Length: 282
Ligand SMILES: [Zn+2]
Image (cartoon, helix red, strand yellow):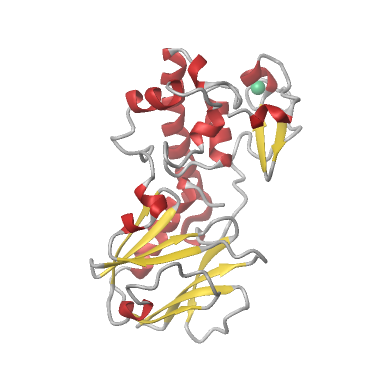
């Protein structure tokens, strides 16, 4: 699933390509992908794309300032730009055709259709956006804000970091990178953190996200719409490889569909987290 860093770079690429272009057709192909009825999807036709922004894990296409297409790519969604006469594959779920002969297509290569598109007059009509927490790279994301949310509730750090109503845009992959950078265990309860540790976590959230954006820009550049393997990560998907800090083998915890990667030495006082039921504690 693309997280804040990938979506930021995608937004840049899409802005360069789409802003100023007029929509000549809009089609929802997969049943259920379009979650709204009013305004009608045809209301987009004849208007131009004014801006593309990101909020949480959503991309927002603002069309003539009064209409917004809000897109969440979920687990398997991706975007392609192609010529309108290119044959659409079965995986094509949603299409915006532009006056210059190009299409923006939403592709979902999955049997479970999870991608969501909303056409709205105000992005906050999308519940997940209305409820979204602070953007971690914005001024609103202060140390006090983080401290209040991390220390104010008995909950494991990874859960807090990936809770979109607390911090917007961080998923499992960058939560692991952030906790590794901050040398904190993913299952540690936020209530046990010292002031110094919260300060470290705040710094790591910002620095890891900025670093990831730079890495993706350098690695993918104009091809940022194509999913890539996050080859630059230090801990994510590095099970059994040496920790870049101490050389200990990186470990993983599986819970439900999600894997968590951590260094037992740097983050867990040399203890391996064995009991996956540890994740069931709320
Ligand atoms: Zn280590």
